[in-house]
Image (cartoon, rainbow, N blue to C red; front, side, top):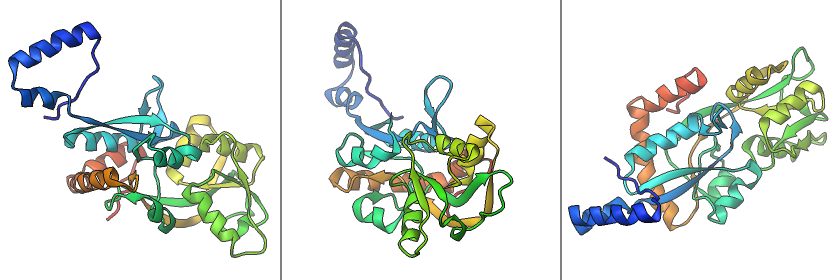
Length: 271
């Protein structure tokens, strides 16, 4: 069974330590406190993958996947840090967090800078959402000249930015000041912007939570595999080597499919 270190009050800690040292070997005493804490960055407003529940506790599919990894990985304890998307990778680079589990799509540009687990834990689609009843938008090309919500640096925004490099009539990207998809989706309903591009499962979850009059249109633009992101350094390499076999096991034993069905209603697990 995995051992975890705990922070005790000074008096209790002394009593507990005396009991530990008198009742076990020095190796066993060292094992009690050996866990290295890994801070995992994730958003707190991205349901059903990562969000704060009614008790202000982080939960969701990505959170539970990491917790399953934590159960199986001795020597480490994972703790979550609610981090805005626009500062997620800066936090990783500055070692304020050591991992990211936040529906991050594997892209060539990201894989040049960061380590991704070889094993992906979710297969996501990218779709367009508009105010219900709108008929003039259904494809990426239809977004040209329109105002589209964006979060700086996420894979959906990168997709639109890459599209703009190839066309004369740019998609007008309106970068969110709030940094949350739910705020952008409310802007779609209220007519402040014309559309948003993101994951349909998240869109459905936010739409139901806020009773938004919006709808997904057209066919999926792309499909992406999501991986856990680590800093491209010695610690990251070590963690990647430990996490990949566990993700593979969770995929093979049906744990990922079970969690996906619980949180999304379907089994969106990469082959």
